[in-house]
Every structure is written in structure tokens, then in C-alpha cells.
Image 1: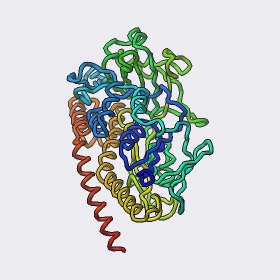
Image 2: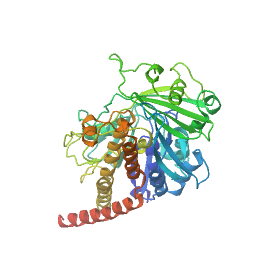
Image 3: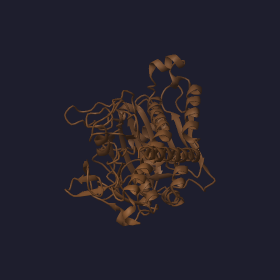
Image 4: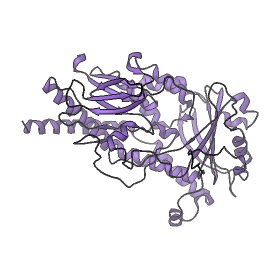
Length: 457
């Protein structure tokens, strides 16, 4: 059995890579291994308040994945209690008006990225993940048992039948697939977003902000950007953050200036308190993490597909023009699985020939089905997330606002309708039905490939 298993390499051991590995590790016909660039996970990044679709998706991977999330997450009540993210206007004449409750669902919880990674890591056999392996090179070989060779920064190498890229915003896999000069190969910062975030103990937080924000998830809106809080670690810590739109970056090193509370003097007092609780980089109120931190919110243009048919190594097949947004928070769980679709001699083992052909058909059919069923939804969600960011910053495109009746933030009822429709799209999706459609398409693709191969014999 072992010499016939498909050897799958996953580049990147973040949330997406670990969740993928947890599912594949249970399959007896797959030998999966994760290569993670860092030597150990750090306690950085914003907390997550996953929506119902994400919770359903974890359960479909396996009940143990869903349970790992539940064990690590902050429970804001029992499983029958509903939780929602409150969206509140913090600037302008409707200051203080709540315009949305996003993601309202029973059993919804918040969790830190570090805790979720720790929970998922426990689901993966220790021999199936290696840390300190930063991918720097990919090569397809024309001979040998495993046709994909990976080269790491430390000089070591590994081989696999199939490479799945979950290696983040600066993906080496993506650049190899598309070519380094492809518009979608490297990230961009469309709207000049800069994120400032700190992690404080709840005990310290209640001295600086309203205690209610240590048990709920608010997003406070205004023209300079939005302010939010996420309770974490069983309500022992609070992640407080400010997202600034239109930041001015240094021409020397690309860095942004320290957060200036003076930019938010016209925001609500509650928002200003949160801004003031986000200290400058040299000051930290929580020794457990390197808090606070700053980062740009980068994103990608969309590739035409999640996998490519390439006849020559690293040659992109098309260019693209449409904008694509890779956002933070819940959309972080929207990782692209970049890989090449195998040609007859490309990615799978050559012996035995009949078994190798069958595996090639299976892998190609599976990825083609995934691409056809999931990609349209994924790209619609990330485009909506980019629109969310602009609405949060009172910067919805002027031409769109003219067509739709003026400035959205000046019409709370219209804003409520926008968030209501968007929330329904993102939170009330038939995840099970999507999987069923993908499986049906996989079977059709596999059968078509089998018949095509027989015709060619």
C-alpha cells in the first residue's frame, strides 16, 4: 500500500495548511507532509471570529477539526447562545448607530490564531510536519519516482507527487505556477491599508476601555479606517486593533508611521479609547507576545484558475486584469491551493503505469472539480470583503454611490440593507451542497478522463 500512495507536499503550515493536512492524513491512499517556514509558531496576528460557514467547513473536514476549534475558542455562552459582530458608526451625524450584526449564529466563538494552530497541530502526526523549511525553489523532473522536487532555504530538498501551496501572501508556489512577472504573482496594497494591533490582558483592558468590549466583537467605523476588539484565550486577553486606510508609506523601506491617535479625534469616545489602548511599537502590555505589531494589508489580483495546464516549466498561460482581494480576519481562511495540473509525465509516479495513469486522472479530476465549484464563490467573497473595507472607511466608490443614491454612511437604513444582504451571502451558504456538487463533478471528470484515455489507446 505505501509504495502506491500519492505523496502530497503542503507548502505552509498556517491555518489552511494544517486543516488540509488534518483531513488528508486520514486518507489511507495519501502520504501527506507539511513544510512550514518558521521554526515554531509565534503568538502574533489578530484573533478570529469565524462565521457559520467556516464552522460547517471544519466539521466537514472532520468532527475532530471542529472540536479542536471549540476547545481552543472563547465561549461567549453555551452552544445555544448566539453571537454576532456588531458594526457601529463611530463618526458623523449618526455616530453610535448600530448598522449590522454580522455572522449571528449559535455556538460561534472567538479564538486566537496561535491557539487555533496549536489545536490543529495536535491532529497531525508528528512525522507529517517539519518546521524551519522555507520553500525557495520548485522543479519538475522528467524522471525519478517523485517528479516534484522542493528546495528549502537551509539547502535541504524533498520530493513529492503533488504540491499544494498554502504558503501565504508571498507564495513561492504561486510565483512558480504563474511566473514571477505575472500580475497575480506578487501581493499589492490597493487602498493603502495599514494594520496596528496590540494584545493586552483583560485586566489591563478594562482600565482603558468599556468592559463590554472585552466580551463582544465590535467594529467601529469612520473615514480614517475602522477600530475593533476581539476577546481571546477564554476571555483572559483582548486583541485591540486599528485599520487605517490611505496610510503613507516610506519610500525608503516601505514602513508606515506609528499610529497617531490625533487622526481619530472626531470618532466616538469609545473608539478613541481603543485607539489610545494600541500603544507605539516600543511598548508592550503583554509579555506573552510581541505586542503590538504593524503590518500592511496586502492582496492579490485573481488568477484565472486555481490550477494550471502548463506545457513548459513556469510559463504562464494568460494574463489577467480584474482586481482580486486577499483580506484578513475570516477571509484569511481563504487560502489558494496553487499547483500544476499534471500532464502525462508531469507529477505522478511512473510505475506501475496503469496505476500511475489512474492516479493522474484522479488528481486532475479532483482539482478541476474544486476549481469549477469553489473558485467563483471564493472570488465573490473576497471581492465582497474588499467592498466591506471601503464601506467601513466611508470610502465606497463614488461612482457606485451616485448610482445607488448618495453616500452610504449618510443613510444608515441603506447601510443596514447592504450589510444584511452581504451577511446572508457570507453566512447562509450550503457548504454541504457545494461538496456534493464537487463530488459529482469529480466523478464526471474522472469518467470522462478514463474514457478519453481508452479512446487514445
